[in-house]
Amino acid sequence: MLQNLIGPVADILDKFIEDKDQKARLSHEIATMAQRHAQEQVLAQLEVNKQEASHRNLWVAGWRPFVGWTCGVAMAWHFILLPVTLFIASFAGFEIPQLPSFDMDSLMTVLLGMLGLGGLRTFEKSKGLAR
Image 1 (cartoon, rainbow, N blue to C red):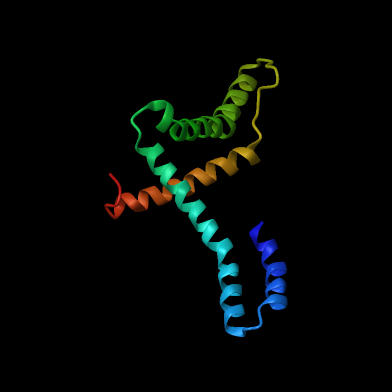
Image 2 (cartoon, one colour; image 1 turned 60 degrees about the vertical axis):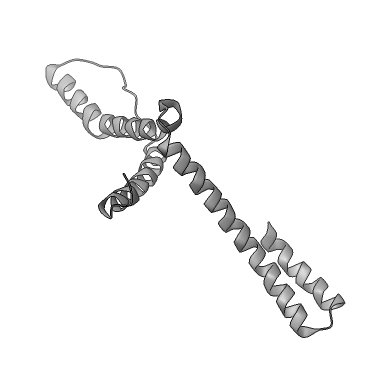
């Protein structure tokens, strides 16, 4: 949102400030404002994530492992258990109803995001940065 305001504000500076050095300094300060704001938001979120991860209460720190295990179980069902179940049922001559399947696009988005974070966690542990 701040990026959309930078251009009009710079135009206003051109109209009211005649000193080119002062105008350049203010334009630069305005241009970096959005970037500083975004960095502050990221740092604040990192602090929240750190506090959540270090919390001993399962209801605070347990949601990430829960999502990971849920994705793992859903992936195991989709790629291993469902095909094996259908094969065994077909081989045994059973008629079974349509078994549930998952929206794998959404599941893979969540799972790959978590695996990326998990990879960073493994890197931190290998460097001795994490407990």
